[in-house]
Image 1 (cartoon, one colour):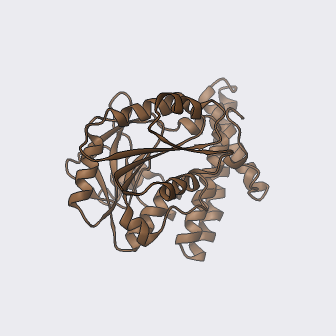
Image 2 (cartoon, rainbow, N blue to C red):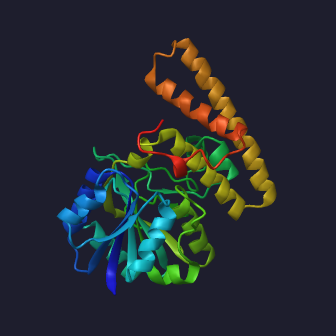
Amino acid sequence: MNDVCIVIVNWNTRELLLKCIASVYESDTNCSVKICVVDNGSKDDSVAAVRNRYSGVHMIENTGNNGFAAAVNQALNAISSKYYVLLNTDAILEKNTLQKLYTFMESHNNAAIAGVQLLKPNGIKQHSFDNYPTLATELLNKSFLRWLFPDKYLSKKCTITQPIEVESVIGACIIVRNEAIERVGKLDEDYFFFIEETDWCYRMKNAGWSVYHVPDARVNHLGGESKKKAPWQSQIEYCRSLYLFFKKNSSRNTYVTFRIFYVIKIFFNLIINSVGNIIVMFLNRKLRYRLAIYYRLFLWHVLFCPDSMGLRSAKPGKR
């Protein structure tokens, strides 16, 4: 059994994938490490590139996009390990990050999951942990909530020097204890993409385990590279996953309330962005992009949320 298995799910991000794997091999660690790449039907020769450059990597090659949760679970079934690190292809480990995560988990037996401090390429901190989705977090402005209740809704601007227990962590780089997985279960494959790690954290916490943010374990994270290949499909998939989280983890009244008011929020944003584009005569690219996203989201709801719209049917670069 390995000490750590690095699980990387790839979908048409070949160059990022190679850099990500390189950062794992360059890590300073005294634990045994195995890398498992699960490729979800990439068309950019990702599989061949990895096999040519890194023969020690365990490859699982899918013929189509099976989704993130299903791909991770394939790796969990294939490789036996004490801990699993889920690592996005657009994330680069700092040299001592892997060792810090391993050491933390070894000294905190109650920890099921621990996440890192994510950094933009320029060193600015990204959001690395979050609260569970609630009516307040999804219908109100999160910046307002952080200002109003700073102790409950922690900001990335907070200075955190020691590991702290949090509700959930951002899944770009997280370490998960196999013992906790065996007791609570693997990722829920009902989630195709997005929020599956939040659901995992929620289930772990409900089972009595703890979830931590480890600030001195640092990862450079580009963020959203796979989403950029199918932008509006990604937004639809996020919305679908958000509905699924509420359905699974909230009362029926809360779920129905959320669905009604979230559609209203989308429609309101569609109107606001339409007016904004008219004012600037559609000359602002960012405003045009936002309008296109809200239009697709609202259309998806008008069509009763069909499965045919989303990442399941998306092709790289399709808009």
